[in-house]
Amino acid sequence: MGIGDRIRKRREELGWTQEKVAKETCRAAGVAANTLGRQEIYRYEKGKRTPREWLPAIAEALGLEQEELTAPEELPGIDVSGIWLSRYTYSSTRKGEVSREHFVVVQQQGSRISMESLPLSNDSPVSLDLTVKGPVITGNWVEQTAVDGYYQGAVYHGAIQMLADLTGRRLAGKWVGFTRDFTVDTGPWEMTFQERSTSPSTRQQYDRPPGA
Image 1 (cartoon, helix red, strand yellow):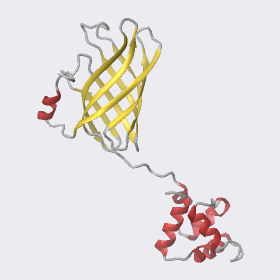
Image 2 (spheres, one colour; image 1 turned 135 degrees about the vertical axis):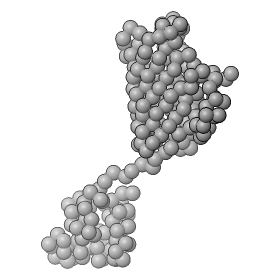
Image 3 (tube, rainbow, N blue to C red; image 1 turned 180 degrees about the horizontal axis):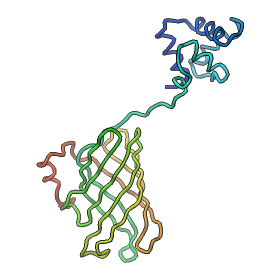
Image 4 (tube, helix red, strand yellow; image 1 turned 30 degrees about the vertical axis):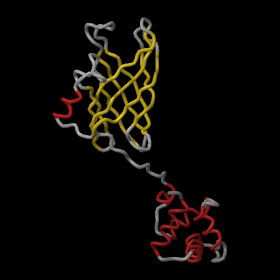
């Protein structure tokens, strides 16, 4: 909702005409009543012009704080709790492009999100600590590589940012982190929604390698 929409909404709450808003704005600004006209209020409400120097007086006339007219619009929130299929890709000096998949349990409380891979879905577990604002999800990831694998139990960590699609059933973005030789690397990370429930029986159902 833009400034013009907020002016219109407040005007309608007060039961005022655009002419009344113009008159009261002039009164608040301490200028002659015809300095600002109804047509200007119309243009502001339609988004054809921005009040700028008139903004403090308009806010005062409408009984609002100026910030109530100019505050950034809050993006709609999403709830990503459930079971998701996680897939990320990285470059290995020995294997080339490698993709890892996990089934992860996602738990959300307000804007905080925690993700934990199910134990049997991959021998290199991952966990993520994230925050969400609108469709944007940002945070950190940690991977504990398999003790008997190529990386011999090394722990890697880094940052991640993903965007949720309009359905809220797919997340896609990029991770960034350091490699075995301590250079910075990045790659794609995406998640696909599987199941809303995170009950013990549901977790047991997905506690397996993806595709098994």
